[in-house]
Length: 422
RNA sequence: GUGGGUGUAGCUCAGUGGUAGAGCACUGGAUUGUGGCUCCGGUUGUCGCGGGUUCGAUCCCCGUCACUCACCCCA
Picture 1 (tube, chains in turn orange, blue):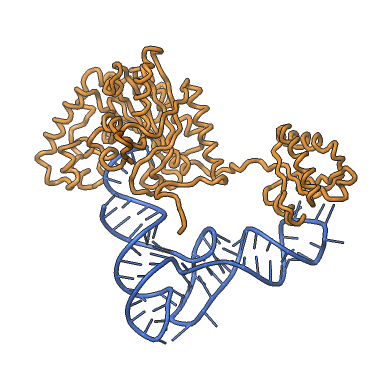
Picture 2 (cartoon, rainbow, N blue to C red; picture 1 turned 60 degrees about the vertical axis):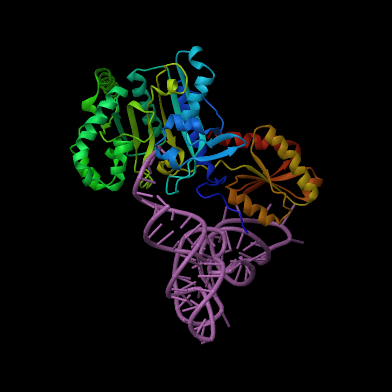
Protein backbone atom coordinates (compact mmCIF):
# COMPACT_ATOMS: atom_id res chain seq x y z
CA UNK A 1 0.00 0.00 0.00
CA UNK A 2 1.27 3.36 -1.05
CA UNK A 3 0.87 6.39 1.12
CA UNK A 4 -0.21 9.59 -0.50
CA UNK A 5 -0.96 13.07 0.69
CA UNK A 6 -4.42 13.58 2.14
CA UNK A 7 -7.01 14.66 -0.43
CA UNK A 8 -6.85 18.36 -1.14
CA UNK A 9 -3.49 18.77 0.57
CA UNK A 10 -0.45 19.16 -1.61
CA UNK A 11 3.29 18.74 -1.49
CA UNK A 12 5.35 21.60 -2.83
CA UNK A 13 8.57 20.17 -4.18
CA UNK A 14 11.79 22.20 -4.28
CA UNK A 15 11.62 22.82 -8.02
CA UNK A 16 8.26 24.57 -7.53
CA UNK A 17 9.05 26.46 -4.37
CA UNK A 18 10.91 29.31 -6.07
CA UNK A 19 7.63 30.95 -7.07
CA UNK A 20 6.39 30.71 -3.51
CA UNK A 21 9.49 32.42 -2.23
CA UNK A 22 9.15 35.18 -4.78
CA UNK A 23 5.52 35.78 -3.85
CA UNK A 24 6.09 35.64 -0.12
CA UNK A 25 9.10 37.94 -0.31
CA UNK A 26 7.16 40.50 -2.36
CA UNK A 27 4.22 40.34 0.03
CA UNK A 28 6.41 40.85 3.08
CA UNK A 29 8.32 43.69 1.50
CA UNK A 30 5.20 45.55 0.42
CA UNK A 31 3.15 45.17 3.60
CA UNK A 32 6.14 45.89 5.83
CA UNK A 33 6.65 49.09 3.89
CA UNK A 34 3.15 50.03 5.06
CA UNK A 35 4.08 49.33 8.65
CA UNK A 36 2.59 45.87 9.10
CA UNK A 37 4.36 43.41 11.39
CA UNK A 38 4.11 39.64 11.27
CA UNK A 39 1.77 37.71 13.54
CA UNK A 40 2.06 33.98 14.17
CA UNK A 41 -0.69 32.07 15.94
CA UNK A 42 -1.45 28.39 16.59
CA UNK A 43 -2.94 26.24 13.84
CA UNK A 44 -5.52 24.97 16.33
CA UNK A 45 -8.04 27.12 18.16
CA UNK A 46 -11.14 26.44 20.23
CA UNK A 47 -13.99 25.55 17.88
CA UNK A 48 -16.18 28.10 19.56
CA UNK A 49 -13.89 30.94 18.46
CA UNK A 50 -14.73 30.35 14.81
CA UNK A 51 -18.42 29.75 15.47
CA UNK A 52 -18.64 33.05 17.30
CA UNK A 53 -16.67 35.14 14.84
CA UNK A 54 -17.45 33.68 11.43
CA UNK A 55 -21.07 32.94 12.27
CA UNK A 56 -23.10 29.88 13.14
CA UNK A 57 -25.02 29.64 9.87
CA UNK A 58 -22.14 30.19 7.46
CA UNK A 59 -20.95 27.38 5.20
CA UNK A 60 -17.47 27.60 6.63
CA UNK A 61 -18.71 26.78 10.11
CA UNK A 62 -21.49 24.41 9.18
CA UNK A 63 -19.68 22.08 6.84
CA UNK A 64 -16.07 23.01 6.19
CA UNK A 65 -14.29 22.92 9.53
CA UNK A 66 -11.81 20.26 10.58
CA UNK A 67 -12.96 19.85 14.16
CA UNK A 68 -12.09 17.25 16.74
CA UNK A 69 -12.20 16.59 20.42
CA UNK A 70 -9.15 16.16 22.55
CA UNK A 71 -10.00 15.10 26.10
CA UNK A 72 -12.71 17.62 26.84
CA UNK A 73 -11.60 20.36 24.46
CA UNK A 74 -13.44 21.03 21.23
CA UNK A 75 -10.78 22.17 18.79
CA UNK A 76 -10.62 23.19 15.14
CA UNK A 77 -7.93 23.60 12.53
CA UNK A 78 -8.20 27.27 11.62
CA UNK A 79 -10.24 27.90 8.45
CA UNK A 80 -9.04 31.52 8.34
CA UNK A 81 -6.92 33.79 10.47
CA UNK A 82 -9.00 36.83 11.32
CA UNK A 83 -10.64 35.08 14.27
CA UNK A 84 -7.27 33.99 15.65
CA UNK A 85 -5.80 37.44 15.18
CA UNK A 86 -8.66 39.08 17.02
CA UNK A 87 -8.40 36.45 19.75
CA UNK A 88 -4.70 37.30 20.14
CA UNK A 89 -5.44 41.02 20.02
CA UNK A 90 -7.95 40.69 22.83
CA UNK A 91 -5.94 38.17 24.84
CA UNK A 92 -2.83 40.36 24.92
CA UNK A 93 -4.82 43.54 25.53
CA UNK A 94 -3.00 45.10 22.62
CA UNK A 95 -5.43 48.00 22.40
CA UNK A 96 -4.19 49.33 25.74
CA UNK A 97 -0.57 49.24 24.56
CA UNK A 98 -0.94 51.03 21.25
CA UNK A 99 -3.77 52.88 19.54
CA UNK A 100 -3.26 51.36 16.11
CA UNK A 101 -1.96 47.88 15.28
CA UNK A 102 -0.99 46.65 11.85
CA UNK A 103 -0.52 42.90 11.58
CA UNK A 104 0.13 40.50 8.74
CA UNK A 105 0.44 36.74 8.36
CA UNK A 106 1.35 34.06 5.86
CA UNK A 107 0.04 30.71 7.00
CA UNK A 108 -1.80 27.51 6.04
CA UNK A 109 -5.57 27.29 6.56
CA UNK A 110 -7.88 24.28 6.51
CA UNK A 111 -11.32 23.85 5.01
CA UNK A 112 -12.91 20.50 4.27
CA UNK A 113 -14.40 21.42 0.90
CA UNK A 114 -14.27 19.43 -2.29
CA UNK A 115 -11.03 20.51 -3.91
CA UNK A 116 -10.87 22.03 -7.37
CA UNK A 117 -8.66 24.41 -9.30
CA UNK A 118 -7.49 27.19 -6.97
CA UNK A 119 -9.22 25.65 -3.95
CA UNK A 120 -7.62 23.15 -1.61
CA UNK A 121 -8.23 21.69 1.85
CA UNK A 122 -4.92 22.92 3.14
CA UNK A 123 -4.25 26.21 1.47
CA UNK A 124 -2.05 29.18 2.19
CA UNK A 125 -3.31 32.63 2.93
CA UNK A 126 -1.48 35.88 3.30
CA UNK A 127 -3.39 38.67 4.91
CA UNK A 128 -3.38 41.85 6.93
CA UNK A 129 -5.42 43.07 9.87
CA UNK A 130 -5.54 46.70 10.92
CA UNK A 131 -6.96 47.61 14.34
CA UNK A 132 -7.86 50.97 15.80
CA UNK A 133 -8.53 53.06 12.72
CA UNK A 134 -12.19 53.43 11.83
CA UNK A 135 -11.67 55.85 8.99
CA UNK A 136 -12.17 55.10 5.31
CA UNK A 137 -8.65 56.31 4.55
CA UNK A 138 -7.26 53.07 5.97
CA UNK A 139 -9.70 51.11 3.77
CA UNK A 140 -8.52 52.94 0.70
CA UNK A 141 -4.87 52.58 1.63
CA UNK A 142 -5.27 48.84 2.07
CA UNK A 143 -6.94 48.35 -1.29
CA UNK A 144 -4.31 50.47 -2.96
CA UNK A 145 -1.56 48.46 -1.28
CA UNK A 146 -2.99 45.27 -2.77
CA UNK A 147 -3.10 46.70 -6.25
CA UNK A 148 0.52 47.79 -5.88
CA UNK A 149 1.50 44.28 -4.82
CA UNK A 150 -0.28 42.55 -7.68
CA UNK A 151 1.06 45.02 -10.19
CA UNK A 152 4.55 44.37 -8.92
CA UNK A 153 3.97 40.64 -9.28
CA UNK A 154 2.95 41.17 -12.88
CA UNK A 155 -0.66 40.00 -12.55
CA UNK A 156 -2.69 41.46 -15.42
CA UNK A 157 -6.40 42.34 -15.77
CA UNK A 158 -7.00 43.34 -12.18
CA UNK A 159 -10.57 44.13 -11.30
CA UNK A 160 -11.22 45.91 -8.02
CA UNK A 161 -14.76 45.60 -6.68
CA UNK A 162 -16.01 47.53 -3.69
CA UNK A 163 -19.23 47.71 -1.80
CA UNK A 164 -20.60 48.61 1.61
CA UNK A 165 -22.83 46.62 3.89
CA UNK A 166 -23.25 49.48 6.31
CA UNK A 167 -23.32 49.05 10.05
CA UNK A 168 -25.78 46.91 12.01
CA UNK A 169 -28.50 49.56 11.73
CA UNK A 170 -28.30 49.89 7.96
CA UNK A 171 -28.08 46.18 7.59
CA UNK A 172 -31.22 45.46 9.58
CA UNK A 173 -33.07 48.11 7.61
CA UNK A 174 -31.91 46.65 4.34
CA UNK A 175 -32.71 43.11 5.35
CA UNK A 176 -36.31 44.09 5.86
CA UNK A 177 -36.49 45.95 2.58
CA UNK A 178 -35.00 43.01 0.73
CA UNK A 179 -37.31 40.46 2.33
CA UNK A 180 -40.27 42.64 1.59
CA UNK A 181 -39.25 42.62 -2.07
CA UNK A 182 -38.47 38.90 -2.19
CA UNK A 183 -41.41 37.43 -0.31
CA UNK A 184 -43.95 37.83 -3.13
CA UNK A 185 -41.37 36.45 -5.56
CA UNK A 186 -40.29 33.51 -3.47
CA UNK A 187 -41.50 30.95 -6.01
CA UNK A 188 -39.29 32.41 -8.70
CA UNK A 189 -36.13 31.70 -6.69
CA UNK A 190 -34.10 28.51 -6.72
CA UNK A 191 -34.73 26.10 -3.91
CA UNK A 192 -31.41 27.00 -2.37
CA UNK A 193 -32.19 30.69 -2.32
CA UNK A 194 -35.58 30.03 -0.81
CA UNK A 195 -33.74 28.48 2.09
CA UNK A 196 -31.41 31.44 2.23
CA UNK A 197 -34.34 33.76 2.78
CA UNK A 198 -34.68 32.48 6.30
CA UNK A 199 -31.02 32.36 7.27
CA UNK A 200 -29.09 34.90 5.28
CA UNK A 201 -31.12 36.70 2.63
CA UNK A 202 -28.21 38.91 1.56
CA UNK A 203 -26.51 35.89 0.09
CA UNK A 204 -29.23 35.61 -2.53
CA UNK A 205 -27.72 38.70 -4.14
CA UNK A 206 -24.53 36.98 -5.25
CA UNK A 207 -26.15 33.72 -6.38
CA UNK A 208 -24.74 32.55 -9.68
CA UNK A 209 -28.05 31.12 -10.80
CA UNK A 210 -29.64 33.03 -13.67
CA UNK A 211 -33.02 32.38 -12.14
CA UNK A 212 -32.04 34.13 -8.93
CA UNK A 213 -30.27 36.90 -10.76
CA UNK A 214 -33.41 37.68 -12.76
CA UNK A 215 -35.33 38.11 -9.54
CA UNK A 216 -32.65 40.11 -7.83
CA UNK A 217 -32.15 42.43 -10.80
CA UNK A 218 -34.61 45.02 -9.50
CA UNK A 219 -34.24 44.37 -5.80
CA UNK A 220 -33.60 47.31 -3.51
CA UNK A 221 -29.94 48.17 -3.07
CA UNK A 222 -27.99 48.21 0.12
CA UNK A 223 -26.36 51.47 -0.82
CA UNK A 224 -29.80 53.12 -0.93
CA UNK A 225 -30.50 52.00 2.63
CA UNK A 226 -27.30 53.19 4.26
CA UNK A 227 -27.65 55.32 7.35
CA UNK A 228 -26.01 58.71 7.33
CA UNK A 229 -22.69 57.77 8.92
CA UNK A 230 -22.32 54.64 6.84
CA UNK A 231 -23.02 56.64 3.72
CA UNK A 232 -20.43 59.24 4.71
CA UNK A 233 -17.85 56.47 5.20
CA UNK A 234 -18.70 55.03 1.80
CA UNK A 235 -18.50 58.35 -0.02
CA UNK A 236 -15.23 59.22 1.60
CA UNK A 237 -13.75 55.84 0.70
CA UNK A 238 -14.50 56.50 -2.95
CA UNK A 239 -12.97 59.98 -2.72
CA UNK A 240 -9.75 58.53 -1.30
CA UNK A 241 -9.61 55.88 -3.99
CA UNK A 242 -10.14 58.52 -6.65
CA UNK A 243 -7.34 60.59 -5.15
CA UNK A 244 -5.07 57.55 -5.33
CA UNK A 245 -5.96 57.17 -9.00
CA UNK A 246 -7.56 53.77 -8.44
CA UNK A 247 -9.76 52.13 -11.03
CA UNK A 248 -12.62 50.30 -9.34
CA UNK A 249 -16.15 49.06 -9.76
CA UNK A 250 -19.00 49.37 -7.34
CA UNK A 251 -20.53 45.91 -7.10
CA UNK A 252 -23.94 46.06 -5.38
CA UNK A 253 -24.07 42.27 -5.31
CA UNK A 254 -20.84 41.86 -3.38
CA UNK A 255 -21.90 40.58 0.05
CA UNK A 256 -19.42 37.83 1.07
CA UNK A 257 -20.18 34.92 3.30
CA UNK A 258 -18.73 35.71 6.69
CA UNK A 259 -20.98 37.30 9.28
CA UNK A 260 -18.48 39.66 10.82
CA UNK A 261 -18.23 42.12 7.96
CA UNK A 262 -19.48 45.69 8.33
CA UNK A 263 -19.32 48.68 6.03
CA UNK A 264 -16.55 48.38 3.43
CA UNK A 265 -16.20 45.17 1.47
CA UNK A 266 -13.79 44.58 -1.36
CA UNK A 267 -12.53 41.93 -3.73
CA UNK A 268 -9.84 41.93 -6.36
CA UNK A 269 -10.22 39.51 -9.25
CA UNK A 270 -8.21 38.49 -12.25
CA UNK A 271 -8.76 35.93 -14.95
CA UNK A 272 -5.06 35.55 -15.60
CA UNK A 273 -3.74 32.01 -15.37
CA UNK A 274 -7.04 30.28 -16.18
CA UNK A 275 -8.25 30.72 -12.67
CA UNK A 276 -11.66 29.49 -13.71
CA UNK A 277 -14.36 29.73 -11.11
CA UNK A 278 -11.92 30.68 -8.37
CA UNK A 279 -10.88 34.03 -9.76
CA UNK A 280 -11.10 36.03 -6.56
CA UNK A 281 -7.51 36.73 -5.59
CA UNK A 282 -8.30 38.53 -2.39
CA UNK A 283 -11.31 39.37 -0.32
CA UNK A 284 -11.60 41.62 2.63
CA UNK A 285 -13.55 44.16 4.51
CA UNK A 286 -14.21 45.98 7.68
CA UNK A 287 -15.26 44.14 10.84
CA UNK A 288 -15.81 46.88 13.34
CA UNK A 289 -17.84 44.84 15.80
CA UNK A 290 -15.73 41.71 16.03
CA UNK A 291 -13.18 42.71 18.65
CA UNK A 292 -15.98 43.62 21.00
CA UNK A 293 -17.95 40.50 20.19
CA UNK A 294 -14.95 38.42 21.21
CA UNK A 295 -14.70 40.13 24.55
CA UNK A 296 -12.43 43.05 23.78
CA UNK A 297 -12.87 46.78 23.70
CA UNK A 298 -14.91 48.47 20.99
CA UNK A 299 -12.04 48.63 18.49
CA UNK A 300 -12.70 49.05 14.76
CA UNK A 301 -10.79 46.85 12.35
CA UNK A 302 -10.33 46.00 8.69
CA UNK A 303 -8.51 43.17 6.99
CA UNK A 304 -8.13 40.98 3.96
CA UNK A 305 -6.91 37.53 3.01
CA UNK A 306 -5.52 36.27 -0.26
CA UNK A 307 -5.16 32.67 -1.36
CA UNK A 308 -1.55 32.16 -2.34
CA UNK A 309 -2.27 29.22 -4.67
CA UNK A 310 -4.54 31.49 -6.70
CA UNK A 311 -2.03 34.30 -6.81
CA UNK A 312 0.55 31.80 -8.00
CA UNK A 313 -1.76 30.67 -10.80
CA UNK A 314 -2.28 34.27 -11.84
CA UNK A 315 1.40 35.22 -11.75
CA UNK A 316 3.21 35.10 -15.07
CA UNK A 317 5.74 32.35 -15.69
CA UNK A 318 9.19 33.35 -14.64
CA UNK A 319 12.41 31.53 -14.15
CA UNK A 320 12.73 31.17 -10.41
CA UNK A 321 15.45 28.56 -10.44
CA UNK A 322 18.39 29.64 -8.31
CA UNK A 323 21.70 30.45 -9.96
CA UNK A 324 23.76 27.30 -10.44
CA UNK A 325 26.38 26.38 -7.89
CA UNK A 326 30.08 25.88 -8.21
CA UNK A 327 30.63 22.17 -8.81
CA UNK A 328 33.28 19.65 -7.79
CA UNK A 329 33.84 16.49 -9.81
CA UNK A 330 36.35 14.44 -7.83
CA UNK A 331 37.69 11.05 -9.00
CA UNK A 332 38.38 8.58 -6.23
CA UNK A 333 38.07 8.60 -2.46
CA UNK A 334 41.09 10.81 -1.79
CA UNK A 335 39.87 13.38 -4.29
CA UNK A 336 36.37 13.35 -2.81
CA UNK A 337 37.84 14.07 0.57
CA UNK A 338 39.89 16.96 -0.80
CA UNK A 339 36.80 18.29 -2.57
CA UNK A 340 34.84 18.33 0.68
CA UNK A 341 37.57 20.40 2.32
CA UNK A 342 37.80 22.97 -0.44
CA UNK A 343 34.05 23.13 -0.97
CA UNK A 344 33.57 23.92 2.68
CA UNK A 345 35.94 26.87 2.43
CA UNK A 346 34.05 28.17 -0.59
CA UNK A 347 30.75 27.93 1.26
CA UNK A 348 32.20 29.79 4.20
CA UNK A 349 33.14 32.47 1.70
CA UNK A 350 29.50 32.60 0.62
CA UNK A 351 29.72 30.64 -2.63
CA UNK A 352 27.05 28.01 -3.23
CA UNK A 353 28.90 24.80 -3.94
CA UNK A 354 28.01 21.22 -4.67
CA UNK A 355 30.26 18.17 -4.52
CA UNK A 356 29.38 15.16 -6.63
CA UNK A 357 30.43 12.42 -4.25
CA UNK A 358 28.60 9.54 -5.88
CA UNK A 359 31.85 8.02 -7.12
CA UNK A 360 30.48 7.83 -10.65
CA UNK A 361 32.34 8.25 -13.88
CA UNK A 362 33.65 11.67 -14.78
CA UNK A 363 31.31 11.69 -17.75
CA UNK A 364 28.26 11.29 -15.56
CA UNK A 365 29.47 13.93 -13.12
CA UNK A 366 30.00 16.45 -15.90
CA UNK A 367 26.68 15.54 -17.39
CA UNK A 368 25.04 16.35 -14.10
CA UNK A 369 26.98 19.60 -13.78
CA UNK A 370 25.73 20.51 -17.21
CA UNK A 371 22.17 19.63 -16.24
CA UNK A 372 22.43 21.94 -13.24
CA UNK A 373 23.61 24.75 -15.49
CA UNK A 374 26.95 24.89 -13.75
CA UNK A 375 29.52 27.28 -15.16
CA UNK A 376 32.60 26.52 -13.09
CA UNK A 377 33.51 22.93 -12.43
CA UNK A 378 36.52 21.67 -10.52
CA UNK A 379 37.91 18.33 -11.65
CA UNK A 380 40.24 16.65 -9.18
CA UNK A 381 41.80 13.31 -10.09
CA UNK A 382 44.53 11.17 -8.56
CA UNK A 383 47.38 12.74 -10.53
CA UNK A 384 46.30 16.33 -9.88
CA UNK A 385 45.90 15.58 -6.21
CA UNK A 386 49.44 14.26 -5.90
CA UNK A 387 50.77 17.46 -7.42
CA UNK A 388 48.49 19.74 -5.41
CA UNK A 389 46.61 20.93 -8.45
CA UNK A 390 43.08 20.83 -9.86
CA UNK A 391 41.51 21.45 -13.22
CA UNK A 392 39.20 24.40 -13.34
CA UNK A 393 36.79 23.90 -16.18
CA UNK A 394 34.57 26.63 -17.59
CA UNK A 395 31.61 24.74 -19.01
CA UNK A 396 30.29 27.74 -20.89
CA UNK A 397 33.54 28.42 -22.71
CA UNK A 398 34.70 24.81 -22.79
CA UNK A 399 38.06 25.93 -21.44
CA UNK A 400 40.12 24.20 -18.80
CA UNK A 401 42.98 25.66 -16.81
CA UNK A 402 45.16 24.16 -14.12
CA UNK A 403 45.06 25.81 -10.71
CA UNK A 404 47.01 25.14 -7.53
CA UNK A 405 44.75 23.71 -4.84
CA UNK A 406 46.03 26.38 -2.47
CA UNK A 407 44.76 29.11 -4.81
CA UNK A 408 41.53 27.38 -5.82
CA UNK A 409 39.14 28.90 -3.33
CA UNK A 410 40.25 32.49 -3.93
CA UNK A 411 40.09 31.95 -7.68
CA UNK A 412 36.57 30.51 -7.65
CA UNK A 413 35.37 33.10 -5.22
CA UNK A 414 36.43 35.92 -7.50
CA UNK A 415 34.95 34.17 -10.56
CA UNK A 416 31.58 33.59 -8.91
CA UNK A 417 31.25 37.03 -7.34
CA UNK A 418 32.26 38.87 -10.50
CA UNK A 419 29.50 36.98 -12.32
CA UNK A 420 26.94 37.92 -9.70
CA UNK A 421 27.67 41.55 -10.32
CA UNK A 422 27.49 41.19 -14.06
C1' G B 1 -22.83 16.88 -0.32
C1' U B 2 -24.28 16.89 -6.08
C1' G B 3 -22.84 16.42 -11.29
C1' G B 4 -19.24 15.83 -15.60
C1' G B 5 -14.32 14.25 -17.43
C1' U B 6 -9.95 11.22 -16.99
C1' G B 7 -7.03 6.79 -15.11
C1' U B 8 -1.46 2.81 -20.03
C1' A B 9 6.50 3.70 -18.19
C1' G B 10 9.37 8.76 -13.67
C1' C B 11 6.75 12.81 -17.18
C1' U B 12 3.58 13.93 -21.73
C1' C B 13 0.56 10.79 -24.21
C1' A B 14 -0.55 6.97 -28.57
C1' G B 15 -2.89 2.15 -29.09
C1' U B 16 -5.61 -2.79 -30.13
C1' G B 17 -10.94 -8.43 -28.29
C1' G B 18 -5.12 -12.27 -29.53
C1' U B 19 2.29 -11.84 -25.82
C1' A B 20 2.54 -3.67 -24.36
C1' G B 21 4.16 1.38 -27.62
C1' A B 22 6.47 6.58 -28.87
C1' G B 23 8.82 11.05 -27.35
C1' C B 24 11.16 13.16 -23.19
C1' A B 25 13.85 11.80 -18.80
C1' C B 26 17.36 8.32 -16.69
C1' U B 27 21.49 5.19 -17.85
C1' G B 28 25.86 2.51 -20.58
C1' G B 29 29.00 2.96 -24.77
C1' A B 30 31.32 5.48 -29.22
C1' U B 31 35.78 9.04 -26.01
C1' U B 32 40.48 3.63 -19.53
C1' G B 33 39.79 10.77 -16.73
C1' U B 34 36.20 15.52 -19.63
C1' G B 35 29.57 17.95 -20.26
C1' G B 36 26.30 20.12 -24.15
C1' C B 37 25.35 18.22 -30.23
C1' U B 38 25.25 13.39 -32.77
C1' C B 39 25.03 8.02 -33.19
C1' C B 40 24.31 3.00 -31.06
C1' G B 41 22.46 0.13 -26.89
C1' G B 42 19.75 -0.52 -22.02
C1' U B 43 16.20 -0.01 -17.63
C1' U B 44 11.25 1.33 -16.45
C1' G B 45 4.61 -1.15 -16.42
C1' U B 46 -0.14 -5.86 -11.50
C1' C B 47 -2.67 -0.88 -18.98
C1' G B 48 -6.02 2.34 -11.11
C1' C B 49 -8.54 -1.85 -8.29
C1' G B 50 -12.50 -5.80 -8.03
C1' G B 51 -16.03 -8.59 -10.51
C1' G B 52 -18.72 -10.07 -15.16
C1' U B 53 -19.05 -11.44 -20.59
C1' U B 54 -15.43 -14.29 -23.66
C1' C B 55 -11.46 -19.77 -25.71
C1' G B 56 -8.89 -15.13 -24.59
C1' A B 57 -10.12 -8.37 -21.79
C1' U B 58 -5.55 -2.96 -21.33
C1' C B 59 -9.88 -2.70 -24.91
C1' C B 60 -16.78 -4.47 -23.92
C1' C B 61 -20.22 -4.35 -19.28
C1' C B 62 -20.97 -3.46 -13.89
C1' G B 63 -19.02 -1.79 -9.44
C1' U B 64 -15.30 0.74 -6.79
C1' C B 65 -11.26 3.99 -5.77
C1' A B 66 -8.15 7.97 -7.16
C1' C B 67 -7.32 12.37 -9.72
C1' U B 68 -9.57 16.48 -12.02
C1' C B 69 -13.21 20.24 -13.44
C1' A B 70 -17.81 22.43 -12.23
C1' C B 71 -21.99 23.42 -8.64
C1' C B 72 -22.51 25.04 -3.45
C1' C B 73 -19.22 28.28 -0.85
C1' C B 74 -14.88 30.69 -0.40
C1' A B 75 -8.99 32.77 -0.69
